[in-house]
Length: 101
Image (cartoon, rainbow, N blue to C red; front, side):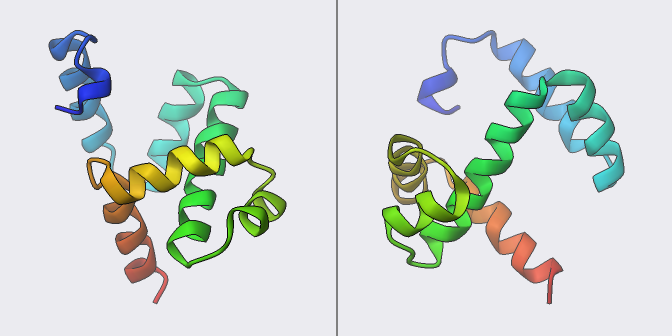
C-alpha cells in the first residue's frame, strides 16, 4: 500500500478501491465521483492528470503551469509521483493514450 495512505483504515481504503474498480464506464465514474467529491476536488484531480500529461510529454514546469493553471508545487508533486510514485499516473496515461488511438 502507498506509504502516504498507510494511516488510513486499510479496510476503508480497500472498499473504496473495490467500488471504483467495479465502475464500468466513464459515465458511471462521473456519477460516483460527482457524488463523492466536491467540485474543487474534482477540478484538482483533473488538473493533476493534465499536469501529468504535460510533464510526461517533457513540458517545462513553466509551460505546464501556464497551460494547466497549476502551481509549480503541484507540478513538482506530480512530477515526483511520475518518477518515484506507485505507478498510477503511468498506468492511467498509458491506457488513455491507447484508448485515444
